Image (cartoon, rainbow, N blue to C red; front, side, top):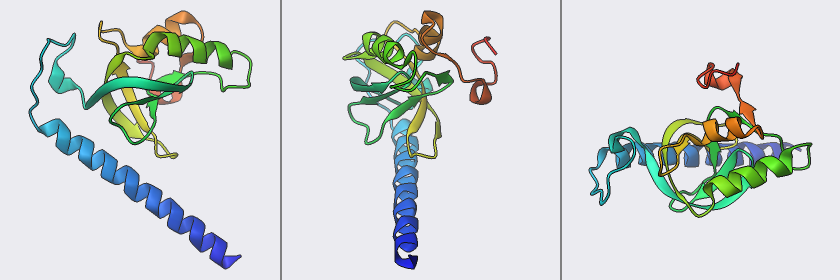
Length: 151
C-alpha cells in the first residue's frame, strides 16, 4: 500500500512540475517579441498564446496546436458528455472553434493540469460569451466573478 501511495505522490509531483514548466514557458514566450503578419482584433500583447484548434474534448475544453495540454475555457461551465445537454454543448463548441485559430490569455492552471484560458476567435468574439449566448453552456460564476453578467 505504501508503495502505491508514494507512486501516486510522485506522479502528482511530476504533473505539478510539468504544469509549472508550462506556465513558466508561456510567461517567457509572451515576453519575446514576435512578428505579426496581419493585425489581430485585439492588441497582440494581451495574449499569452495562440494556435489552431485541432480537437474539441467537450463543451468547455479543447486542444490547440503548439500546446502540450488541454485548454479549459475560463468562465464557462458546460454539461459533461453523457449528461443532459453535454452533446449539444460539445457540438456547439466544435462548430465554433474547430480548425480555427484562437488567441488566449492564461488565467490559471487547474487541478488537472489544464491551462485555463480566456480565448477569442479571429473576429474578436470571446468563446465563453458565444457559448453562453448560444444557451448550451453557462457562466461559471464561482470563477468568473460575473464577468459575463449572468450570475
